[in-house]
Amino acid sequence: MLRSFHLVLAYLTVVGFVVRGIWALSDSAFRSQKWVKITPHVVDTLLLLIGVAMVVDLSISPLEGWLAAKLLGLIAYIGFGVVTMRAGAQSLKIVGFIGALASVCYIFAVAFSRNPWPF
Image 1 (cartoon, one colour):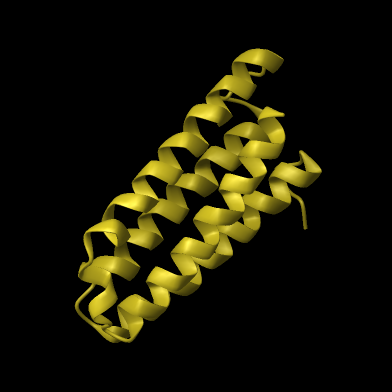
Image 2 (cartoon, rainbow, N blue to C red; image 1 turned 60 degrees about the vertical axis):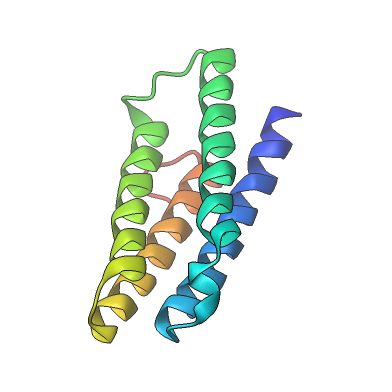
């Protein structure tokens, strides 16, 4: 049950990022709406809390193997996401958007293969 909810939230956070990324690239007024700023934090917090609960439940060390790789991918995803949402230059937003999507693809590949080198 936790895994299923975690997966749903993971897909939801990616879809939300893609929509917000497109809005950032097009300078849409939707970006400034309060729910657009709050919702991703709620989804990501739930995603992280459920991930921690699964790690505890499965007694997995987050500092080695595939889970550590997934966490490094998460850090990259967050960094690229910040660039996408806050950069002033359009070219930096595009680099951030592509980098974030590549990072999330890596996270998903690691999660499904349970291998830090999934490709």
